[in-house]
Image (cartoon, rainbow, N blue to C red; front, side, top):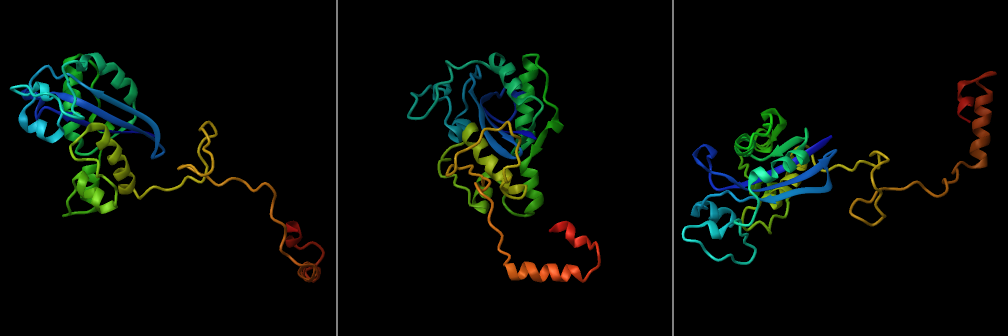
Length: 242
């Protein structure tokens, strides 16, 4: 089962009021396990960056009024592609996979607004799975923000000093696995087409023994068993298991 854990960063809260997406980050899962494939794109919103949004994600200091020089780790959006230029590549990555999103209504609202503006197919709302709703159902009355869930599950989010779409989607992937019951080993039952990992790696799986273990039944136990079977008649079913 293919799933895409996704997050966006925006210039504000309402696309209907002119707010735009400035970053998309997404992580691919297969069978609830990361495949290593990600999608990450910064986007030129073709508008200014409100100070409130900049304080949240720190993206696009050059779009502030007045503009500011970019500091370490900050991104200049003026030389990034507009959404129309990346829309098809984004849709190709997503495909028909389930979209795992924290507060899905917000991100889906922005994604479908951007897709509609460039005449691309919209994403069905039922394609999204909202981890915020799952968290509120599992832990009623408790904080359900991404940071709160990281604290609950002991997930390291120390690198999250500001919001970032790719980092947040990677953290959300870990939170999602905990919300649905915790990361479980698959005991090597995945399809044979998957690449194997050498022992000692993060995805180590047990391998067959090079030689079967020898029997631990003694000769005396074997003889006692045969004598017992002899008392059961000519064809006891237990002889089928010798």
